[in-house]
Every structure is written in structure tokens, then in C-alpha cells.
Image (cartoon, rainbow, N blue to C red; front, side):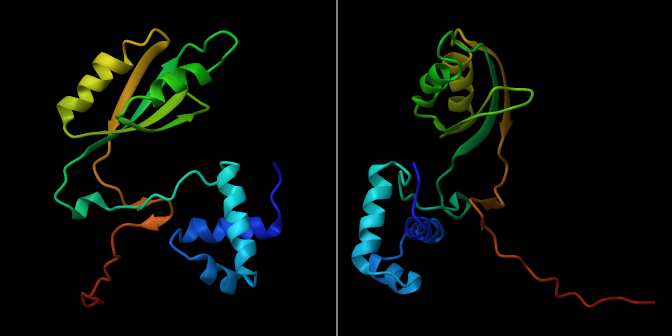
Length: 165
């Protein structure tokens, strides 16, 4: 699929701020509003744009979530490679993202659950029991500093006086 320059401009603008209106985007990009709307419609129909999620800093809410990154080594399935096993894994509610990786492991999962026990049960009872899964390594996310290019915490300037000899 090839995209026009105008479609790429709309895509990049929406990537930076998905809340921008077609009217505002048209002004910002020097395009007609109907052309912006047509570009967005095409990008959605072609599944280039697949959603408009809000980026939430959950640490600033009372909601507790346990997040982890799981490295998974698998045996690829004949005639389907890694796609079939990835599809089986990404259907679990706990899984928020699945990536095919190069290197020491095959798949990287981002998962979240309400508790450590729930996440541990997911790994031991759902993920590890899949025939193609050879091994897993779970890494718990302790704190997020930057997500999708957005810094989650304000940088605090050092207001201490400099001490010099």
C-alpha cells in the first residue's frame, strides 16, 4: 500500500495528537477539510490507523495494575511460522501487546493484571501450557518513564546551590 504525501502528513499529525479535529488539521496542514476527512477515512479503512487510545499515567490514579514484559521462546508451527502461536497468545485478555523479535527469544509480550497472583497464574496456567512454548522469562515493570515518545513525569530542575572550592 502506498500513501500520498497528504495522507502521510495527516497520519503524522494524528500520531502526535489524535484529538486534533479535521478542521484544525486542515488549517495546520494547509489542506481542505474534506481532504483531511477523506485521508482519515482511507487510513482507517486500510487499517493503517487502528485506534485512538488515550495514553494514561496509571501511577497517578488509585488503580493498581501489575505490568510485565515476558520473553517467550517458541517452536514455530509448520507452514505458519510464528503467526499462529502469536495469534493464540494475543487473544488472552492479559496480553496488551505481542512482538516478533530477533535475538535470544522469539516473542515479547506486554501483559497486565490486577495482581501479582493473577499475572503469575496467567504465565503458569495459560502461557506456559501452550505446546509450542519452550520457555518464558518474566520481567516486572516497576515504573514507566516514557511511553510512545511521551515523558510521563515532569523533569524537576535541581534548585540546589552549586558548591565550588
